[in-house]
Image (cartoon, rainbow, N blue to C red; front, side):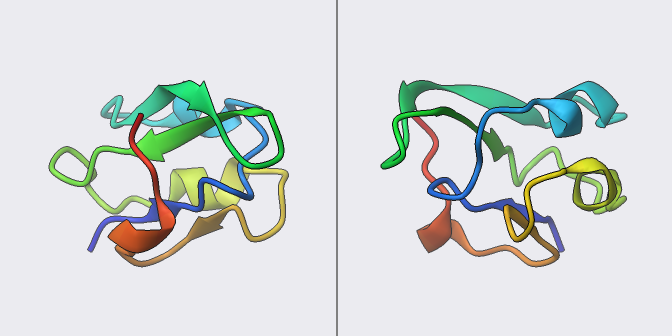
Length: 74
């Protein structure tokens, strides 16, 4: 099952995107409710490796399950 980046917790650090072995983490074109850039997981490409969860320095920004309602994609 793919992981989810919670849009309103993501602070745009991008360590997850840089570490992802399949490039499934994309930068959004918008800003979240905090006014920061945010990233999202392409659920179709994610291989559930968990690297994003391990490298993200923002507590609670990545969760180990697919929750589409918590993740914006634009």
